[in-house]
Amino acid sequence: MGSAPAILIVDDSSDDFLLLKRAFAKSGVANPLYWVRSGREAINYLSGTGPYNDREEFPIPSVILLDLNMPDGNGFDVLTWIRNKFPSGGLLVVVLTHIEEIRKINRAYSLGANSFLTKPGNPEELQELINIFSGYWLLNNRGPSARRQSSADHKLEPYDDN
Amino acid sequence: MTTTDLVLVAEDNPDDAILLRRAIDKAGITARVKIVNDGEEMLLYLQGRGVYTNRDAYPLPNLIILDLKMPRKSGLEVLLWMSENQDLAVVPTIVLSASNLEKDVRQAYNLGANTYFVKPTTFEELVSTMRMVKEYWHRAVRVGPVSMSQAAVASDGP
Image (cartoon, rainbow over all chains, first blue to last red):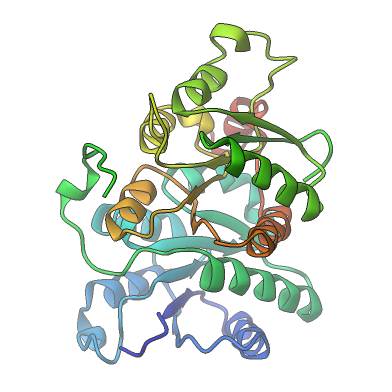
């Protein structure tokens, strides 16, 4: 894996992926982008099964951009699966979905999404959103290092000041 | 964030609290800012106990900024309590801690923190971080904690 952590885009729309890819490039984001088109494919990617079994080629991402409305396993299935396998401390998940899905925001947060964004209606607004997204999640935010976790990581350990 | 929004901050170091308030102002965040001194006071506020029983005077926040290492109750203990109270799950919670330890980062996220920022070392960087917070959470969809119960019924159903 290169030095910049990977971003995984889970979105069934190739148009939306291309727009995102262009926006990230214009934002100057050097992080490698990976794209899967369905919930099932996302789970295969993250579990390293099928064509995704080479972790050098398909690294565990540090941030996932997740569309909610997809065929073959919707975004909530993916979110539930992720939070079972990768507790919040292991992977950041930002929902990026169409405005029609906004009513599902509570469910997304309660299933462990770190944030909820809606897809802007035009490329200019998308560019602005990705600029802000990149500054926030890739430059300023201290994300966890990606790795699988044991359930022991859930426990609240006594605090030490070291 | 609007002038009617409330940012609730837990910060035990008085100097850091003053700097943070100034940085929030300078970043152009117009929301009201309430700073409490430690995790225990943050819990009293969120639970509406002690001097915080009046919800009109002390409404639930729209954004929480939380230090980790605080006396009486730590930021992690606050996060633990919040994670057990789903009504607060949609309030964005930003950890702002001097600690860059992987263990602290992981625990904070595991307990439901939305974001983890390592405290910047200069005031200018702190302003820049707060500006980022303002721009990002202005964009991100948030649900006010007061209307959450209604929103949950309307949106997700049983």
